Length: 97
Image (cartoon, rainbow, N blue to C red; front, side, top):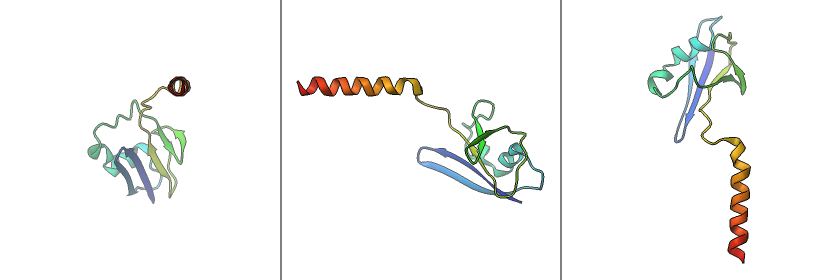
């Protein structure tokens, strides 16, 4: 059966179609895709994995047509984004004075 494995680095999106045996797991699809060789920075012990945007485990079974997604770590703490927006707005208001 055919599935795909996707991983996106800035400027380097990878979407690989992989033929896997029936009953394969997410881990097996990732291994067969060769993505770990092409992207040695991927750490499956630390990075989250999903199928069509829903988090899953490496041991999850796949169905034909599934898209396995390897997510990059978050670079910015989401809790700090509102603080940045407030600071930027305050700076703009100071510049208008």
